[in-house]
Image (cartoon, rainbow, N blue to C red; front, side):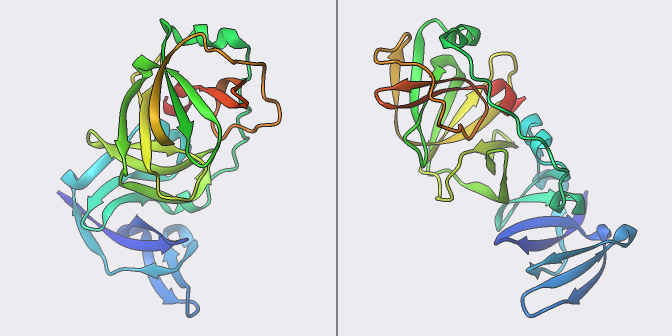
Length: 245
């Protein structure tokens, strides 16, 4: 089986819009195209393709973390152009969500990870901050990954990554192409997400030397269980269960 889509470009990012939702196409300005949609609404895009047909087997299921963060997303399509997010019109006018405050706890937060002391230090891309995770939660580090950027960041989610036949959320706060991402899983869920990182991954043991108190002036780009000072820089224990589940 297959389905027809229009490829529409918004903010320099290409999305797939089911063709049955589009009732008319009109050039609005020299740089905008207005789409008339079912239910009497409209949508402005920068470009639109002729309808294309995508077979069912080209679809990639969104992970639960991506579904929660991307209301109106239908799934990801593996097309010759790369990984493209299929969406409903509602995707472009998402509901306003209250920003989740980070859970800043004390050093006992490490105990909640059920770690045995074997840990990984990863430097967050575009930042001096480092992430601390139990080694068992870091599944894989992928250099120069192919990611599908979103038009705008949503609570730290900036892209999607195809992994084992599904699209998983990628978190970060840099507009640069990621040098590498770390695939991590939660402690209470098998679900996976990716975090943009830099440089190599360091294996270490908990507790760490040179660990100080909290870093109140640093705003973590992702929910965390703890935020501390380490060798003069922020160190975060990310809440992967919130990111991926």
